[in-house]
Image 1 (cartoon, rainbow, N blue to C red):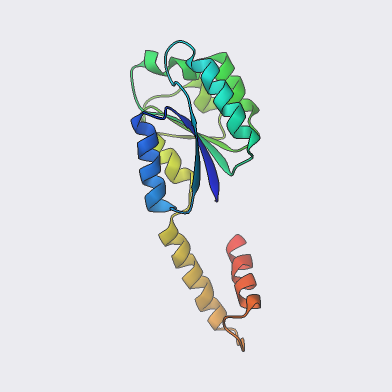
Image 2: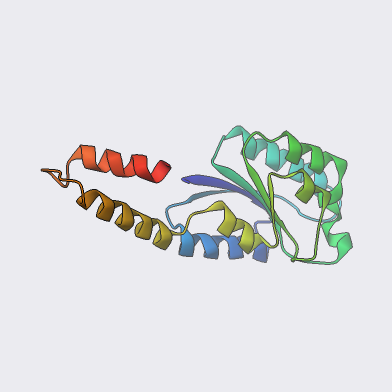
Length: 165
């Protein structure tokens, strides 16, 4: 995972939470913020435009996020326009809207629903520690095979091939 789009309010806590999770789990991630209103008049149309713009970049994943609030605060995520825009994306889309008990129609149209914005960031990215451990396991497996040049490009290619399985 190299690059992801985040569609949310640029001033909300959800974006700060997502950045914090990504810095811990996968600091190499390139984050493109598509700032939008997430509640109130005009929020639905802003979200549609942001989702379409994010999808046009063909990044690895789109996170559609908003922190918790009253049901009325989440209503824009139930609008037909937003639901259709979510369903129309060709880029994998993970929603993290509200808290664990909140469900919206956008959640149902997405590729994957996370309980919170932080959980969406966790689902969308690998953890660097886990990846390092897997690389160590694969290199240990490779050490059982006799290779004259342990740092050869063939070894590295083979390790990458094993990780993709």
